[in-house]
Length: 111
Image (tube, rainbow, N blue to C red; front, side):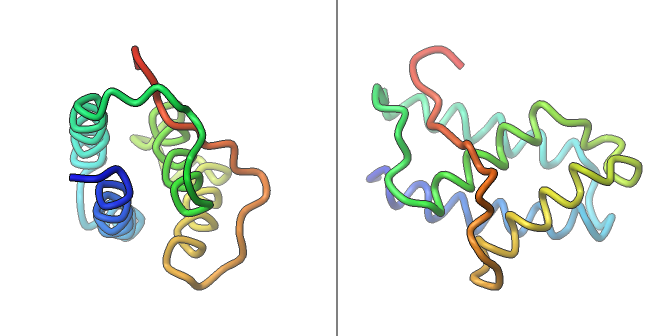
């Protein structure tokens, strides 16, 4: 699989998981498992360049890192994280502008 195909597939899956999480239709552990699976699959590419190839990929990695660092277990109480997720999801779905605060970088080597 090519990196661009991987990112495209994972963006679709991330949208699905985060939409479900925001609606309380799934438990946060399912999102956490998805993220760890992404990292495991990503490691197979042996990527050495941390620069995303598109703004969509940058937003994808930004969301992944924000979720790992944030407290999605308490998403209802974390208004900042919830707003961040919603803004990024809008962009990934094609319904919003690029969130200029995104600083998503590809994981390289050890992550």
